[in-house]
Length: 84
Image (cartoon, rainbow, N blue to C red; front, side):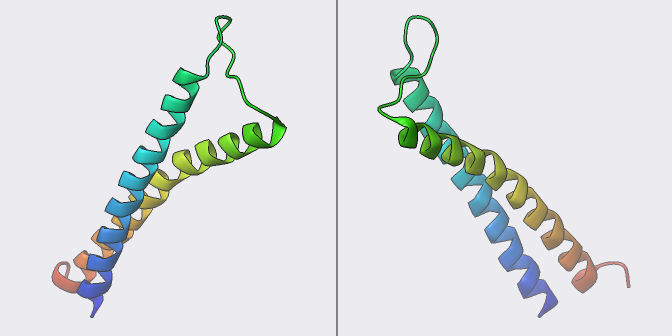
């Protein structure tokens, strides 16, 4: 049972890392396509800028949470199979 929890955490960790990377690339693509000559990112309105900022924050947080889940998965695997 402990190994199964470790497996689920490992899968969750990989998913979060990939999801964060995908979101980050989407943010970078938007910024690249909407950058002015002066280097400023252009938004349609204030709400769009806040949504982009929030998406970028989540894109930065997901890989960190994924790594944390992967570390816990490792600890669960060590508890199930190692260090007896």
